[in-house]
Length: 401
Image 1 (cartoon, rainbow, N blue to C red):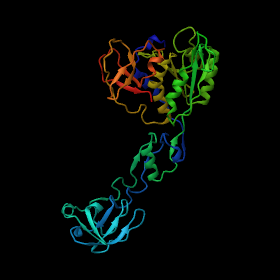
Image 2 (image 1 turned 30 degrees about the vertical axis):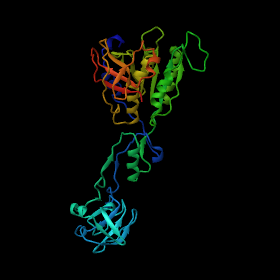
Image 3 (image 1 turned 90 degrees about the vertical axis):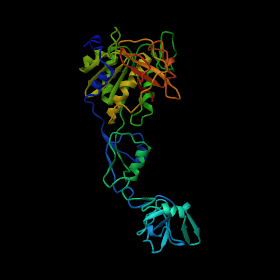
Image 4 (image 1 turned 180 degrees about the horizontal axis):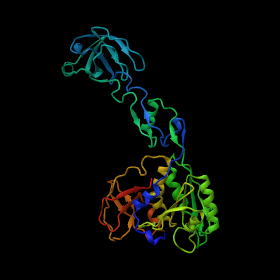
């Protein structure tokens, strides 16, 4: 199928085709201390009620409801957190710490600041005594979660609250998906690394660093080591064959259009790859190509820097998330509105780099094409404006991070 024949495909249709049938990587068990940012591969159930018994929600005094208005109620015991409690003696109260177990017989807790203490006895302030209620300041057994309740579903990244839940319910070695191995092939005879002496007809490689940076903050992705490939069908064929053997998915930048030095589509056909699409009605990044070879997804991005970083964020990151085992390809985000509407209206989906103000409004950054990485450097992400649409939005926003 030619590039022009399917150029009406929308970004959402292209992403759906890219993700269809994708399998996630295998699982492994790791120490909880090393699991931050990894993708949970198990649902987490409580191994006991939370809390495991009735406990005090305040520092204060545990007593019977009938004794709340008594003068000089004796303090018969002191209960600390982490220790068992003895039954409450009659006609008395117990000094109690936050998180300490409620003694048998106690029906409420009065905060310490609501009483007058005199030696070994207390008197509850009259106004507090009149407003007292049964069960006040007691956290009941199982009120957070019953035993066997699901507190975490699989397919989410382990962040601080998730780590707290895992620890609280005894999961010291959670099951997570292993790190996704991503190959990045940067094509182009003109491309040089920053260590090379640069002639005027050459360019420094910015695609490798930009794609690497996109994934670097994600603990579920293994570090990416870009590989430069010259514009040669044989070199590309060898590089693709090696990459497929060693990685879970393969990203290629450049060589994906229809020029006489663009070998990606031809080489994939020769290798027997199944092409899912070649061309999306979008700007930048129209010549995007997706294929599968030996059960490995290959996503080929246009070579211009802005096209690469935009399509990598719009397609490569969601693809990698699904391979990593996330339950959602795209993290939740909020639409944003432009401060000023763009003047032009084109029959293509537009990805427009924006800077987000402190008030949450988006200011479009003016670029001079998909090679203008200087203009995009200060952007926070981009908005997606549907084909033939105009106005200030709100539009879908894709943050770089």
